[in-house]
Image 1: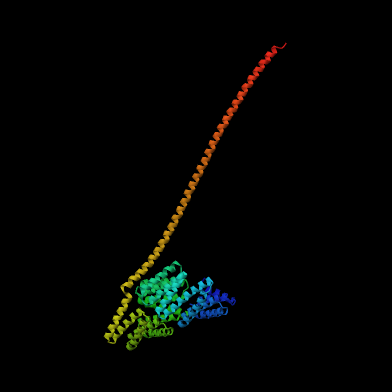
Image 2: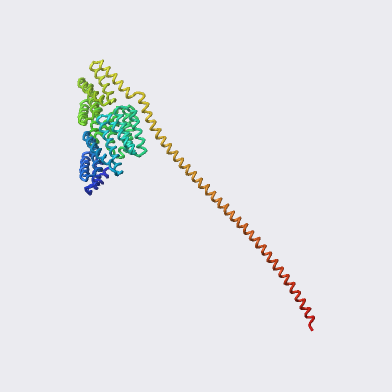
Length: 501
């Protein structure tokens, strides 16, 4: 069923719902399906669900509504509000966990794990990577205890994104491929689409644009097929970035504009800010500096409003680079030093690398060779940290482990099928052998029975024949006696007749 049909069905159901728990479920389901296409309406519906759940004192409905409001607030870029809703949800999930009802308790544990995972996303968006990892690992442990494959795959994916944001690409890929394996085995299409996109970004950041395009196009196709509008827009933007790095700016611009349009439709402020910066990059490379600066400043305003330090550092760095190119060296120095400080604070080594190189070029232009050399050395150190040989080896190993795991799974499945066929064949052979033996035993038994019967019959025949012989002999003997007697009587009769007077 398409998203529109689901929304229509839920809207129709809502119109005929009573003021009970079913209406809370319907409101939340409708809000969930609208969260990407119309986040403001989703917030209204989730709020209605929360109020009704409180009115009927339904804790599970309250927890679900608070969690969903946290998601919607994140989409709006209101991180503080999002954390507040998640904390409220955690309190309610805990109350369910403490109940004696095993079903409700299990649902509370599952909800708690998901909420903690979402809180980690907020900390990650704020560039508080240490806290993000802490919360992701908590969620991962909970989902492993629950045996929730979807939750495990999601947490592994998110941990990978934290390492990706810190340019620890080998570790990022390690978690991505672990998540991908679980997602493929469990047929988690949405998760799989997300992972493929993130793997593409890692390859893009490492300069392997061919592999990046391959993974991003897979993710783009899958996200379109299953209706993931937000992910679809992100993939468009990331493909645009690949084409920009390949200096195919016309294609890059087209992809960025398509992504920006979807961001506006969804009111996705975070992605909207990033794509404004992406468009600024294109205009900078094209030499259209006024247009580039306009986009960079718009992006910076949104980043500051969101408190997104990664975005702020990126936008300040871009503005500093533009000022360097246009000869506004003092303004460039101010922007670049701010950008570098924030990047070091959040340990975004990939941003540090870029800012150090820009500062080296800036100080060269300012005729300050000492500072230029100092920042160039720091640039080289950052670059080496990202691209050192060990990282490359680990990255290759992660992919090899994943491919080996897939092949091993296929081989295992094939072996199991072969064993099953062999077992079936052996079973059939055993049945045939048993049948033949049974038939032989029956034949032997029947033959023995016939033999015994024949033997008995022959014996009886012999006895009968013997009896018959005895009888016949007796008859013949009796006849002889009778004949003998008759002869004597005739003889006597003749003699008596002779003696008559």
